[in-house]
Image 1 (tube, rainbow, N blue to C red):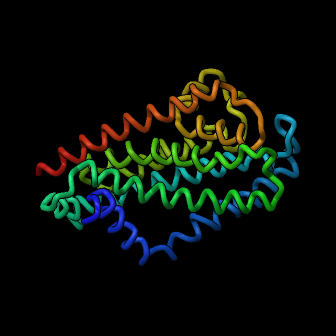
Image 2: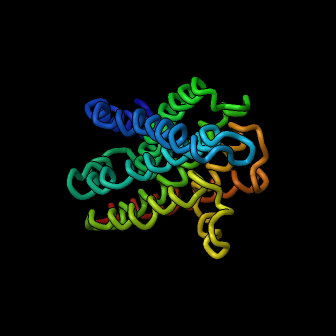
Length: 252
């Protein structure tokens, strides 16, 4: 008998096998379109940032934001639906599957999807000549940390609500502002000084800076261990919240 966590992962992958075509555009094509339209198109007007062309500067931001958005998107309706409409988690509760297995099974599923997207995107950007350092091979690891730090708390949020209308608030007031103001498209130091701490609170900003340091072979604005430590802290806090939220929801 396989481990319960692997069984949950296998169930999620089996479901995704029926739906992968619908997500192929947003997973693989949309980031490349961003790269071409903004990195190449807008980059022709922007010129250089930090001594490198705008295309090379924006690549790590697009990769990290793709992982961030994918993790949030996959942790909303699917998780709430498995509680409220499908009641798949309630069915799992009648088996040897524990709450931790449910949470980790879903997170591993998200990680697999994010890693495939990150590796494919990395290969495409290499063809554009946008990678300036061999440390770029570490960017999928950073993407995994960004995905975990975003997916775990959103899973907890999805397990705590009754109506999917709350997801619109999550997208409008968390996901979109984080993407716009976390250093993906322009440096955070161009923001008003009072607003910058909000960007620093976003795990996406730390992921963007680590990825940018890896692809450009430069040093991030803060020590690497601070960026990585903050992402790990977000992952641990989100995971604890998700396990508690799942356990409380399964008591109904």
